[in-house]
Structure formats: C-alpha cells, structure tokens
Image (tube, rainbow, N blue to C red; front, top):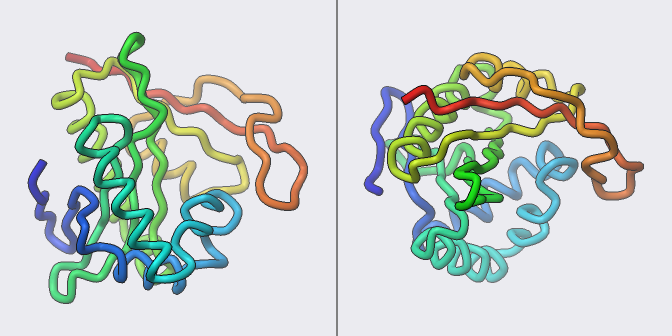
Length: 180
C-alpha cells in the first residue's frame, strides 16, 4: 500500500524509518496511551525499543499478520496517530481496528477520517466482511469515532480487557459490515 494523502495529514504503512518518530509520538502521549495501548507504549519507551518494534511491525505488515498505519503531518512527517488492523481472522473474514491520536490533534476529525479510510482499505484490499472496534464507555472520543464511521453497537463484552494495574473492564463492541 502506498501513502494516502488527505488534506491535513497522510496515512502510511509502518516503515523502517519510523522508529525515532514513533518513539517521539509515544513519549509525547504516554499518559494518553497507557490505559488502552500499554503494549505499544512499553515497546516504544526508547529509540532502541522502537526500532525493534517497528522492524517487527514491518514484517507483520508484509506477511499480512497485522497492519499498522501511521498518521503523519505532511510538513515534518511527525507521527500524530496510529491505526492497527489486528486480530485478523481469515476464516471468518473479519478483523479489529484499534486507533489512537496525539493530544495536539484530538477533536479535529482526523481519527474519524483515518478510520473511514482504513476501513474501506480493509474491505477492498483484504476482502474482509466485518470490522470490529472495541472501546470502553469512558472513552467518549473513541466511541464518537466508531459511530461517526458507521460502526454499530453490537453488545457489551463482559470483563473483556484489563488495563495495567486495574480491574477487568466491560468493553463495548461496535461492528461494521462490508456492504459490497
């Protein structure tokens, strides 16, 4: 997949050159990411860790195991967000989307535009029939993104996620069906 140019940012597959940029993004947004992206956070606390993380994600992208996309502002190519296509089930033709945006770019519609774009990519390029977004009810921004992108509430997943140093949380499942 090539870069997708949008008016205020671009979406790119993870690249070997993204290690330092990803470490910078994670460091700048650590508090924002620690509850729902603890593995990504822990894997990118130093530039060296980020280089290993990026190398692994590039291999996973190439093999089709998982797809990590970066959202970058075009002028300095600074990472402003991430979108994962993960938990891909090739038998059921479905996957999960997970996304985050940096503090400085919240509430600008970037995440909704990126999720719509990657959802369409997943349906056309991966031939998926269903996409899922799993979100906690306290994450109002993420709930709005799911709803803005046409994902419909499906059900509550009881004790589906355990954040670091917290009790298990019930999560809300949103689903988008491929209408083609």
